[in-house]
Length: 182
Ligand code: HEM
Image (cartoon, rainbow, N blue to C red; front, top):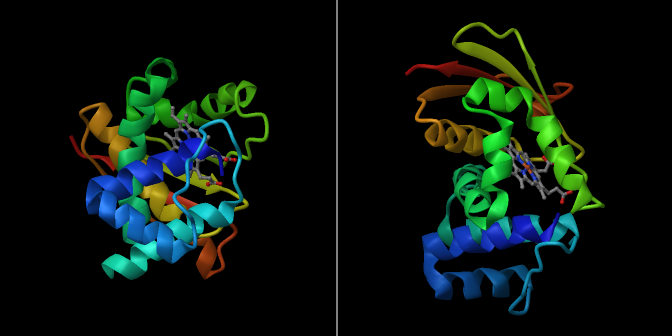
């Protein structure tokens, strides 16, 4: 995964556990004081190992950590220079999700080895939609749930997210039923 993601994970862990906590997480993950470069690509195992170590040290399950990270990711990218891109992508949750694939493909010019996930919106009504999430990477659905909540906060909307189809329980891909409640 690109360093941009790992740097955001580092920021999130430091926010939650402090600098000492980050040092402990790195030690447990077998990483020696890493300096992530946003534009460099790292093996996915680096990201998974950090989440695994944070989970062991805090006693929180990996899904809870990934969901928290997803929320943080929206704030982080806005501050790291991707604010204009976020603004162009949409002005509410539904519109943003319709344009999510275009958004990820726009950043391919900077991240040439990007292997982005694929999102599709179906069954949309005025206040509900079904979001389909396809990826080659396992276990990251909770991150989507967190990002969705972060997105809603960005647009001052209130949403509920129901994780319906689950790939790790045998479904073809993950789906999320999103309801805008305010
Ligand atoms: C400006 C905002 C965003 C930027 C700059 C961005 C960029 C990236 C980058 C660089 C990766 C790593 C992929 C790789 O290394 O191959 C990634 C992964 C991912 N992105 Fe985005 N992204 C943004 C917003 C979003 C949003 C709004 C969602 C909504 C759900 C999302 C969902 C994901 C997921 C789930 C992954 C994990 C990889 C996977 O599932 O295979 N991203 N993104």
